[in-house]
Amino acid sequence: MRVERSVEHCVVVAAGIGSGHGGRGGDLVESSTDRALARFRRVLREKGQRFSKIRREMALVVLEIRRHFNADDVFRELRRRNVRGAHLATVYRTLPLLVQAGIIQPALFSSGERTFYETSFERPHHDHLICTGCGLVVEFELEAIERLQHDVARCHGFELTRHFHELLGECGSCRSASP
Image 1 (cartoon, rainbow, N blue to C red):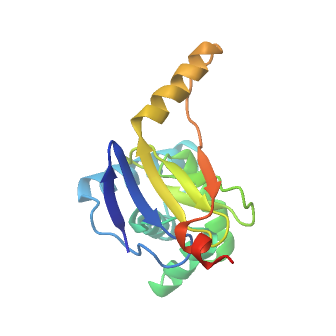
Image 2 (cartoon, one colour):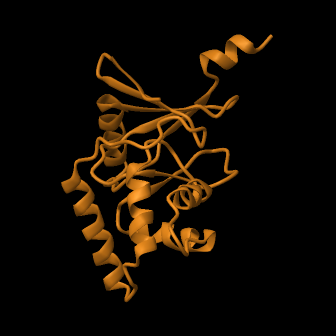
Image 3 (cartoon, rainbow, N blue to C red):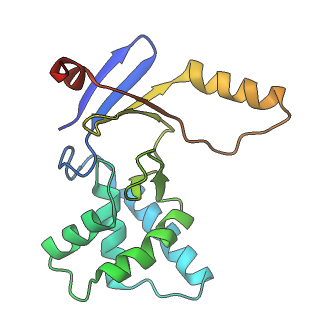
């Protein structure tokens, strides 16, 4: 399930971690998928590694996931698709290659229990609100925050190349459930 709404200049997309929210999306145009696969193939070739059927299927899986995911989620989806020869160890070895290709990026959540990822290929930058009670993750884009972060970096002589921004708190459901 994907919920979108506009609040002034803020786009909010609610997504649960590993909870099945979102599921597979069909809104990526084929040319974007082709570009992502070509980039992944190029990174593998530069490293002297093969673009195997399993790696191709894994790239397709992460491009279709519309929520934050971990290695177990990818492995389960590969098994659901009956991808022969897919092993959890292969997933763990391939995830960093997908990061290097710019197809996914680690989603740095403060809980630190497991490493989560999100698809980043041709996707706009966004930040996260994270409920410390239930784990709900809300993605948001707010240009004012982006400008402020760049201004702060410039004031200190930095040029930002990337950043991860997460705001922790309790969602409305958890607050109303608390006594």
